[in-house]
Length: 574
Image 1 (spheres, rainbow, N blue to C red):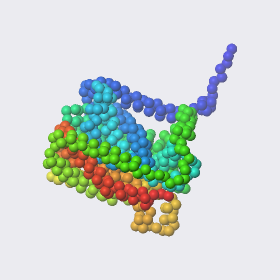
Image 2: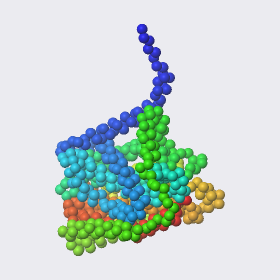
Image 3: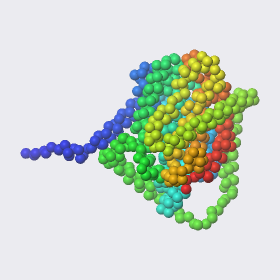
Image 4: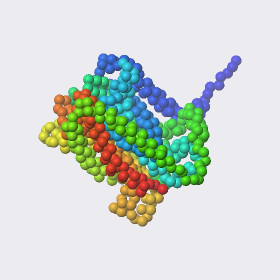
């Protein structure tokens, strides 16, 4: 007779710890979330018309899951775009001449412009299925996330300390290993702050991405954005408050499950560590790090990744210590090709626009662009005066940064549309001028780009520099002039460039406010594009987008870019 000896409780404890149980629950919860949020993707598009979005709060968990999945997929695509596009722009001088101005243009194109051009294309990829409309919504959200992250990563790659580059050369790291061992770790703390900002900023345009209406084409996807649009259309204040509550819950969840673990993980990549300062903590990060099951499951992937870093695919031959030969003709040919491509694009744009455009239309668009430009300049100046001191105070106090992180994400995520009931009612009741009092809605979502980047810059001030300032009793304006402002200046310029472009984009939402049957318009280019999009006038949509891109590129090339290169040259660490 065979006797089976029962496994003791201690034996089970050695096999599975409480960290393993928590990790399994987290992974199962993630799989359930992905399954529930994506189970409608391959349904016929006609199902959306059969079951239109409802204001019943019981549907909000499903709507929140579907919106969050779209934002996470867009975030993954934005990371891929950032690591490729920004790296090529930072590492290749010839590519930089084309890619950085192109990024300025892409940043300036409003989300309604992308939707107008791409919605039919994406729906044609998967005809008759919900997945095609989901592609269009995800791409629209991608355009509200990617440009900020790309600018941040580009700025970080351009300011990698010289000693890190010298160490990489000393250890003879190949370009692939240098990128993942030097460039990405140095850029990661700032990139994570900008990922938070991009994730929160995408909430600002989630209404436009889920309630898509271009001319006679109308597609409404279930989600918090379409829920908000329906609540505004029906003037249902209770539904608006339900939407705010659902947003708050979602933001708190992904702050705990995604961003706090990333902040805790990226703390190891800080350029310097300050003694006596507690590192950021995350219970999710602790669970995943201490779980033996997770460690065993990811060990093969880790081994494969380390082997990929040691491959010789990207090795270069040992360079000779000779002055590099410059081939003027190659630069001439490259510049010529770029000019030809730009001229061809301009000809196509003009030919398309002239189909139904007159000189008076051009003049009107340019004049409306001046109105919006004035608003952007004034609002960026006010936001800088308010948030730079606050950002420095938060960034130099890690405890305050941990407390403020979820609050800032919620405030940055707050869509301007949710303030329409208050703003429209107040302007009508007080008989106020919409041209003035609708303007603050433009900066509502974009001011946080400045704050988040200033916090990242202040947190990166070396401890030695702060210690020297304290020992020499440097304080007041002298501390700001010699320590704080030089340290945060490159980060501030990055945030201000993104905030400026984002404000132009937000003008489409902010210069046109509706609450039920009450509609307010402010004179500006954003309102012009919104009105032409509603009418389905593609010629004037393209005209408005082209004029907006023109203003953004001119301002960036004549003002922000010189400041950017000055900051890179003058205030670079090391």
